[in-house]
Structures are given as C-alpha cells and as structure tokens.
Length: 101
Figure 1 (spheres, rainbow, N blue to C red):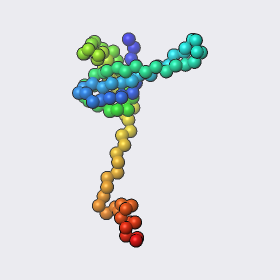
Figure 2 (cartoon, one colour; figure 1 turned 120 degrees about the vertical axis):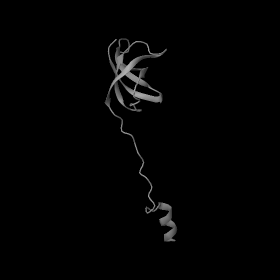
Figure 3 (spheres, rainbow, N blue to C red; figure 1 turned 30 degrees about the horizontal axis):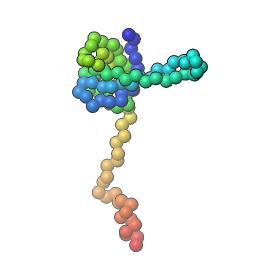
Figure 4 (cartoon, helix red, strand yellow; figure 1 turned 45 degrees about the vertical axis):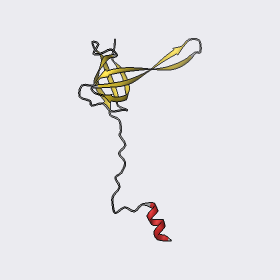
C-alpha cells in the first residue's frame, strides 16, 4: 500500500482519528469522472490532529480491528474559529435602542 492524503473528519477518540480520502476515477460507461470517498481510522500518538487538518497517512501493521494506518505528518493545519470575547465596556445592540427612546 502507498501513503494517502486526506482530511481529518473526527478526532473524538484517544490517539485515533478518522480521515476521509477522496479519489477520482473515470467511469467508462458514463464517460465522466466520479468522486468516491473512503474513511480510514489512523493512529495519532500525540493527539495533534484537529478536524479539518490535511494529513498524510502511512500504512502500518494492524493496531486494532479497523486501524491499519498511522498519521505520518500534518500537511496543513485547519483554521479554527475563535469567537471574539465579550468585554464589559462594549455595549450590546439592545442597550443602544433602549437608551434612545
């Protein structure tokens, strides 16, 4: 087996992630390209992967029933949205309306 590149779709387990790998192939009858997605469970020793990370998986010996891959490297980290914190001196839109009337 050769290394595959995919996107992390779940990291809810300890030391394990689920990676979705997309592949494109040409359908001879439809004469179109078809996209198929496979999901692999992979071993993430240090729990460094987050949802949305692009990772490269290397094959390994069977680590559990469904886990035959190891996260070799994180190619691109996901951008995680952090909402701005609400400060005390910032007025809310509802306050300005009540003060105006």
